[in-house]
Structure formats: C-alpha cells, structure tokens
Image (cartoon, rainbow, N blue to C red):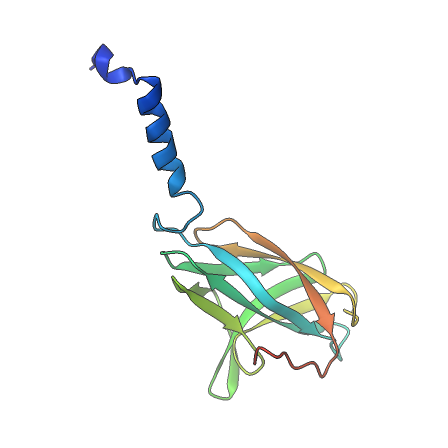
Length: 156
C-alpha cells in the first residue's frame, strides 16, 4: 500500500523539530543503552614472562546493562576473564556490567589474565586491550604497567 502524499511530506520546521528530538537522546544512555567507560586500569609488572594479571573498572552510566564477553590484546596469545569465588579462582565466560553501575576488576576479585605473553610487560610501559561487549561497541584501552607492589588509591 502506498502512503498518501501528504503523509510523506514534512515541512522544513517540522523536519527540524523531529531531527532535534531524535538527536536529543543520542549518547545519553537515556534510550535504554549502556554508556561505558574505563577507569583505574593497571597491570602490576609481572614476575612471570608468560602471564600477567590486569585490573580496571568498567563504568556504565547508561540505563541498560551490558555484558563483557571477551578481551583481546596484541600483547598476549589469550586474555581470559576470571572471578574469585571464596578462595579459588575460576574462568568466567562473561561478566555483567550493570546499568548505572560498575564492573570492578581488583586484586582478590575479578581480574584479567594475560596468557602466552609475547613480551613481558615492563613498568612504565602500556598494554593495549580491546574490551568486547554483548551490545555495546568494543572499547580500546591502553593499560599502564605499574610496579609489582603498586596499590591504587581507589582501593582496587
């Protein structure tokens, strides 16, 4: 069925108002989307030449939850997600990033494991990672390598 001609035409002022209303919600997270960023990322300089741990906080200021599904890095053959349950560490297939919340990776809790390192991360350097999510676009982060005894002021 063809729409009536009058329904297809918008006057310039009506089109401008419609466009402005559509753009008003972009990037705000108010339309039911996640709004993700990364804070407090670091890797303690590892003792091992083949493995390292990484820590960071993924902040979601949006109205929808998302899910971290994987992490990749050109510096490692594999990066896996881990959580600590009780006193044991287990690999996680994915981790939730709650709406208006945070996913925290910290020593003794959730953390990234860099396996099969291509070169040992050195204090003062950075390791680039790409965070992949179920719904949101990937985030690329350069994680600074800190001293092996580094303790962040943020508590993680």
